Image (cartoon, rainbow, N blue to C red):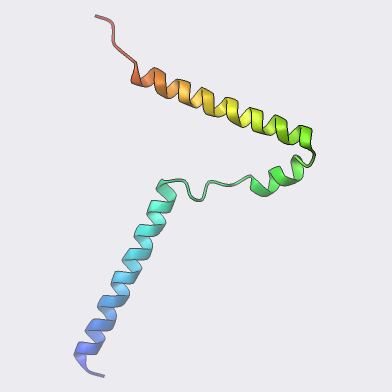
Length: 79
């Protein structure tokens, strides 16, 4: 094979590998792989009442997280 073809193949494969690595790091950073309890919750909350309770707990957690974030944003040190 010609040297030009080998250089082109190495360049393209390096570019595609870097693109895949960037996509993986982006997915980790944005939490795309954080669904650890999906299958466990499906077995644990198999009736409507348990599912409603789980949704309420999740909403409470979101509200608490939002309240903590709001508190951090509105923080002003004492004079």
